[in-house]
Each structure stands twice: as C-alpha cells, then as structure tokens.
Image (tube, rainbow, N blue to C red; front, side, top):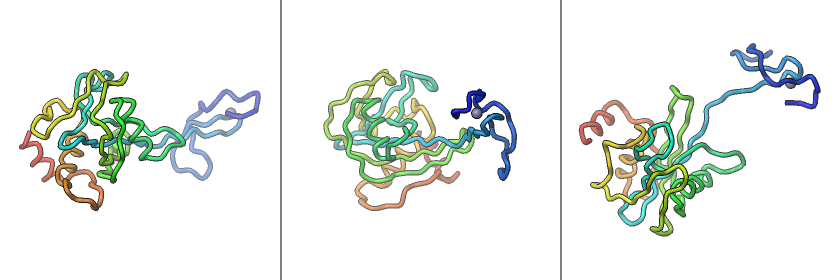
Length: 185
Ligand SMILES: [Zn+2]
C-alpha cells in the first residue's frame, strides 16, 4: 500500500482518527481501506419495439434473464460503462439516451444507474457472461424468469416513458407500484 518496506497492507480493524466507524487500516503506513457502495451501470436497450435481455451464464441467478448491466470500472463515465456492459454481455453496440432510473439497494451496498438506450444494429451475440441473448417484444418478455427485482422495475419504468423525450429518472418503486407490477406477472 506504500513504499514502506514493513507495510503488509490494511489488516487491522479500527476507527481512524476523525472517522466514526471501523475500517481496515495498515498499522505501519496508516493506509485506510475504505469500503463504499458499488455502482452498477446498465441499460434498457431497444431495437424498434424489442428490448435486449441476456440470460445469465454466471452466479448469482444463472439461467435467469437480465438487462445488460454490471459494475462500473475506474476511469469511465456511467454512460461509457453502460455501453461497455452491453458490448461485453450481448456484443451489442448501443447509443445511450437518457437516465431512466436510479436504484438504491442498501442491503447489498449498491447503487444502480439504468439508462435508456438504442441498439445501433440488431446484431447481438452472447458474451462470456451470457448463455444467450435476445430481443423481446413486450408480451414476449420472460417476466417470471427475470434475474433481479430491479430488472422488472426498470422494464416497467421504461414502458411508462415510451414516447417521452424528457423525464426525471425513476427511483425505487413505492409499495403500491410494486404490488401493481406483481399482480401483472
Ligand atoms: Zn501499510
């Protein structure tokens, strides 16, 4: 963690001076390994009236369908991250349009930013993290085989904004909205 030859890395749990919670600290060089929420970037990407979904080849939720999304990398923008994930998971070239939703998932210390995007071509193919990929019309979406709640949320919010060019991003749904969407499954 430093040029200090005695440094064996952050390994002691303590509250650093001026902080208010325990962190993993290196007792030699005082390096603090902060653990903060991770940002997931993804997209609802469409070709005409069809939506790109990927069937997961990896845990968690192997075999279930998801939107192209994943952890943001360092030194990229959120939109670049969303485009990269579409390429990695579905070999899809996309033009990111607008921010569709911001989801807080404090249980797993995650923030998800889901964009609306357009496919530049309908040519897609599974990347290493996908078993298969597909373009689904609304009534063809495998609603009961979606990998995560936020996939359902983002799809519903996308549908509610069809034809709109300017809108505020959605946030976590209300209990009423959730109950309504679950009845529609
Ligand atoms: Zn150290």
